[in-house]
Image (cartoon, rainbow, N blue to C red; front, side, top):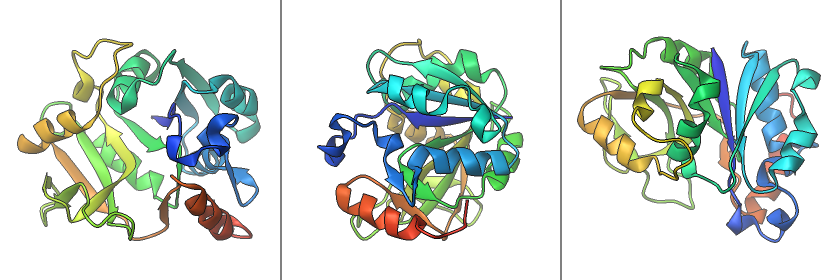
Length: 229
């Protein structure tokens, strides 16, 4: 099974740090945010990764190359301009193939169980089940979340939980989307939630959206000296 890391964002809220360094290469605890993901994905048994990039993407490729230093193989999905989440995934489908895959945002610090996500991915059939999302309690800086999670494991419209930026998807979720076209995820989520095609689970462990310099300092404090990868 393949995994994808989203690394194409500009990181506007992180400026000026991201003026010359792509956000996934910002460091916490001596390792880049993306490097932590690669280490944890490799430990969970993922050996084939796909990474998209746009802003300063050549730096990201130079940092990780073919992935062999981390014990994985990396294929690069290059975007001339960031295509947003759904557009970036659709553009990378030729590299991801026709089977379900796991995905993680490149700008979070988290101890999400990728093995559990892989298990959820195996249950996606592309018809009745299109995705499985990791949800977290709403952080202090965001009172209203993204969706609710029912006792039956299906996502519903609501704001009680925040999407963690980690999920398992079936490629059918993105059927009909042309490559190279920018597109957000929210319309796909809402359509599929209405059809009861998305499940999820709640993660109560480490999760930090590293979206500001203040949160980067917090990520560095958390990651320093911690053997959680």
